[in-house]
Image (cartoon, rainbow, N blue to C red):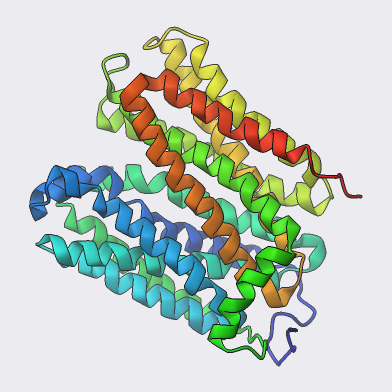
Length: 403
């Protein structure tokens, strides 16, 4: 399977992306990714308004995650089959309609259906990232991916405090209406700014999906990098699931606004993305991967240095958030850079498999973290958080260093 360079196809002699295009793609990833997280801090008021029981309120987040996971496996690979610009805009359109549906919902079923399709439509992000890799020459591919991924991570980290801030002054419905307006404007800009990319794989959709199983079997670096990131993203999800519970508990007693500021501090870790891309371009992925794993492990260790509830403990927890986000983001970009060099004709499928694997790890980490925190507090949750990157590090020692 090869890409045939057609007129306007990005596979033909790409030049380094302009700063304006890099910023646009990074902003697009961040604004789309934010839709996955806007509802999380608003579960209380949304479930009360819709009449959802406390037991069913968790479906608001769960169905969004299910939609996103299915989209990674069944929509993202289409980037190897259909013209990329039209595909990105079509998937964004689905997500925009779903966001509007969530804002209009007044009963549980329409909102939960919208939550599912918000997740499905948000996979436009993971079509944009390999698209950016196609736009960049080989020598600058890691840098391009890292810059775009920095926008994604900023969107993830700022979505929760942004929705909390809006809901502080306006009805929660307005969070979704404002997001829909932003997405419409973004789609108009992308439709004019993005050049076309037309892949020629010669496969049907069924053949495309069947080829993904073969890619898993025959691509050791995909399996390895996916497992590395699954361990680290599980730790990431565990941390951000349990720290709001810790900070709002009796030891720290922070308000929701103060917890939102804590989340904002953690967004500083997004600066790792462009740094990681440059390290990968220089051939330093082997060392950078191990340092990323060590930084995630260290993030959990340092939270136990100072007495719980003290000001030093809060400062160390904030530093841990930055350190953890830095390590997870670094490893994410290193993994994408590693699989994107395998061939332009496979990039969307490889990215879908990579993201789906570690996304599953994140879901497991979040579930186990919440359970462990309920049973044994921060000590129990953080010990699992430490074990996850340590396991990834030990597994990485079985990898031979390549020149």
